[in-house]
Amino acid sequence: MSPPRGNVRPARLADRAAVAALWGALVAEHAALDAAFAVRPGAGAGLPAAVDRILRDPAAGLWVWEGPEGVAGFCAAERRTAPPAAAERQRIEITEIAVVPAARREGVGTALAHAALDWARALDVRRVEVRVAARNPAGDAFWRSLGFTGFVNVLDRRL
Image (tube, rainbow, N blue to C red; front, side, top):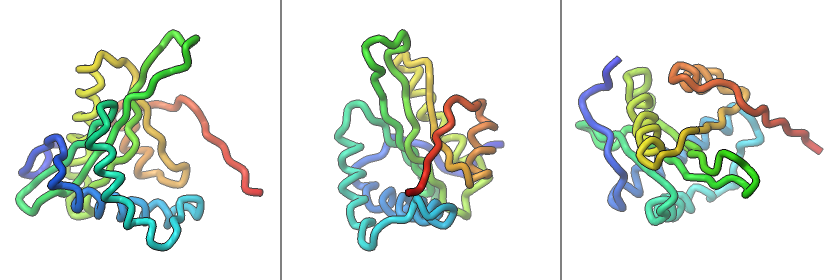
């Protein structure tokens, strides 16, 4: 599947508002899946500053999909360092990925994910992780279609 007309590129400061809006929509979608993802009122106002932090962080990557209508998706990833005793010293964690509904199932998310995978290869990091909400079968299917498999089950308990 080839994505619609457009391209993936590293995000810039000028993309802050678009990325923050997509991130806010992603948070809302996750909150609808599970109350554990609910956010406090007004929390979305902090998303532009969070985008700025990612852009300034040398251990992070942020990419956008830009098409004729503007930014239609983004992907954020971070380089993580393992504890000193671990044989595998580093990994990349894709922390966020979002695509506007009109561009879903068109290859945009795949192109964004590949930008993060290419970044990992360029850093000579051999493992990439992503967390998927248990109640998000579409997200799970998306990542599995890219070759991701089960690794760790994260369990929680409400008190």
